[in-house]
Image 1 (spheres, one colour):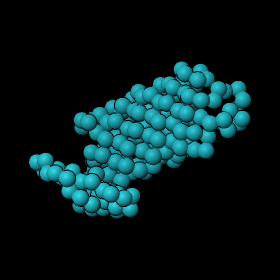
Image 2 (cartoon, rainbow, N blue to C red):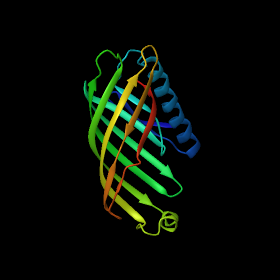
Image 3 (cartoon, rainbow, N blue to C red):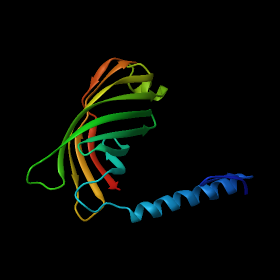
Length: 178
């Protein structure tokens, strides 16, 4: 490892081999995890959450841009391909239920499907699928723990690829909050 130059508060570092690059990346990740562990949110609201959504199964990242507006990114991965979805969610409090909110909003997705998908679904085109999404759900942040759960329905319609409506997206989300 060699420090090339110092530019204000940023060091630019040149790493000569892959082992050093992996070690440096691991140190950055562990440092970020350490900082996030001390910044965890144990109240009844949160700013950002990272976790999983069950059915059909996705990586979920959700971040509030305002007290009642959030962006959620979902990455679904399978042997048949992948689908990336972005949602804009408007949240509202449910009176008498601290930490529980309803949400609704629009979104969009892009998916790439393999030849295996085409074999299992011969009436649908393989390749790329692009479309719009909607979402309707409930979001709960446990007070005293950095955990958030959500339950939603996420209907979608594909415009590119095979044009069709899908009503089976959505599910149970479990996330770690910051």
